[in-house]
Amino acid sequence: MKRFSVVVRCLGVCLLCFAQWSFAAVATPNAVELLRQMTQAFHQLNYDGVFVHSEASNMNGMRIRHIVTEGMEYESLVDLDGDKVEVVRIDDKITCVYPDDLVINRHSPFKAPFKGLKKVAEERLLKGYQLTVDQESHRIAGRQAIIVSLLPKDEYRYGHEFWLDKENYFLLKHDVFKANGELLERVQFTSVNFKPDLKQDDFIPNKGKHTKKQTQVLPLRVKNLWRFEWLPEGFRLVWPEARALNHGTSMLLLSDGIATISVFVEPSMSAKPLSIAGMGATMAGVSSFKVKDQLYLLTMVGEVPGATIEKLMTVFMPRLEND
Image (cartoon, rainbow, N blue to C red; front, side):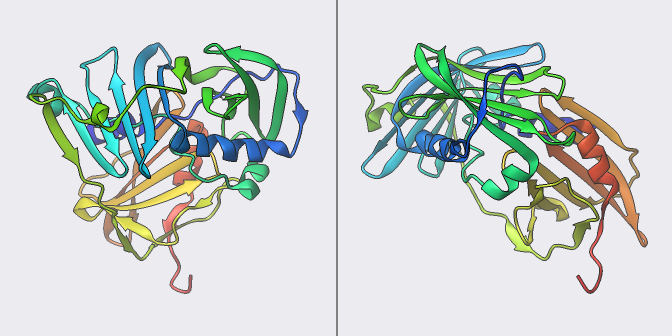
């Protein structure tokens, strides 16, 4: 269970969130284009803002700063309520700044919100969600906003609502809901400045602080030895191959264009019964299964209902020789 809880905590930081079912909305093909503009805004705009991430009874405030200069992205993410941990990103180079060595040992690097959605897969989104746009007057963080909602077509995914800045399509608020309207997670900006007085030197970690560089190494691609007998409509494997991690662990990744499910398979020495747990919109399942004489541990973590994780774990199996 220790590994299980660590996986839930680490992957649960990858934020996805959205809002309510009751709104005056009209179906429109512009919803997909608005989502595309949203994904571009986070990488192309300059901004300095404070947002709050809430799930269940937990709430945390963070500050994010971002500029694009000389063809490079500079980004800083600071925890305002915890140990003052900061993550500085310059393009793909990441440095974590800690107040002391003790904090280094108990903190996993956190990620900026809303960055998981890099490309909008229109075909898969339309299979799993009804997309709507509400262009009535809305206001959030002192800005006028448009609301793009994704209503699930089945019970295997959550609903999502995006509040986009009406001028530049920056994502100001993001809620994740159950089918009954219960709010699971929310990420909401309380303030944001799109003309910040920031320069490259503002993203250099302070001297004397405890820093740790994060090396982004792409995992080795290996042959995928596994398959699913069934997948929810719109879900598919993101990679044709598996990814090899440490200690013989293979990783697969499923997505419907919004929600993602990470799948980990590794050889095991002991059997584990099926267990499901979660935090906010992120659910995780762990169980063991046997193939011939080899026992494997299967772990799945994703922003989907627990029933989806549980069903997927029952239809996961070795690939056939002629696959």
